Length: 315
Image 1: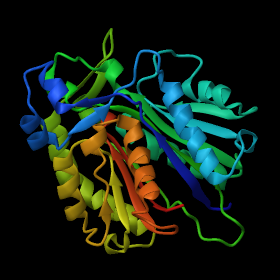
Image 2: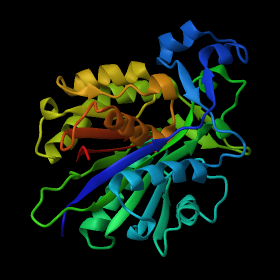
Image 3: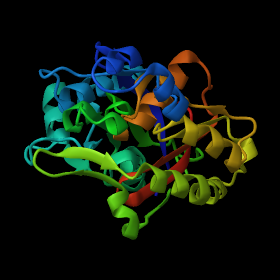
Image 4: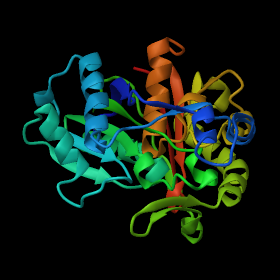
């Protein structure tokens, strides 16, 4: 069994930007109120003619181009999403069709905000076991479509977007670029983050999630580092689920990643659910904030209440 690595990443966001001032004209809120509570300034919103699979395909195409790979090089497509409207065909099959990928295995992964890190672990396991040579792993969500835009407690949080990674087997003898995953859930807290009902609507118990994340997540993140044979001080970057800046900043400090760049994409993108980690990671790579080979902790948490984290090497 060979290890796997991330060969390249890519991201995509819709052109429309919704500011806090725009929201203040829609519900009883203000720029100061939003910034002080969640740290968000702007978010990107997809139009009615921009479905989830289109967002995902744009991000995936960029990752493929960055990796220097053609669609025919991919034999597994995994899409992490919780905002797919139809049951079949799934988002992965639709992305494969858009990109012209011949005969891939296609699966959707619905673990909400922890979806990308779950999908990344699944791709890693599949490549290690020889079930695939090269995978496209995508996190994509259109949260605007499941949001009650009259509810100021949730509509100020969400954004739309996608991020993707090309995962492939490491060359013989090379160190794995994706460390063992630490994943799990707290089923009794599954109600804390919900997308349910007809029509489906996003709701959460923010204080419950905040308390869990700030108290329970730091030791889990440190254990994910241990599984990679590293300490938090060794990390070059930390990319947590971009839920709330007031969660992200204290968590990075509690983890002990004192030398790491901390992703704060939530300020300009909002909470994009499964897209948040690959979106933020890809932006760090694009800006040159981290370098090839740097160890980066990815850690998703949220719906179910599920979590998954692993240390990866920057492509």
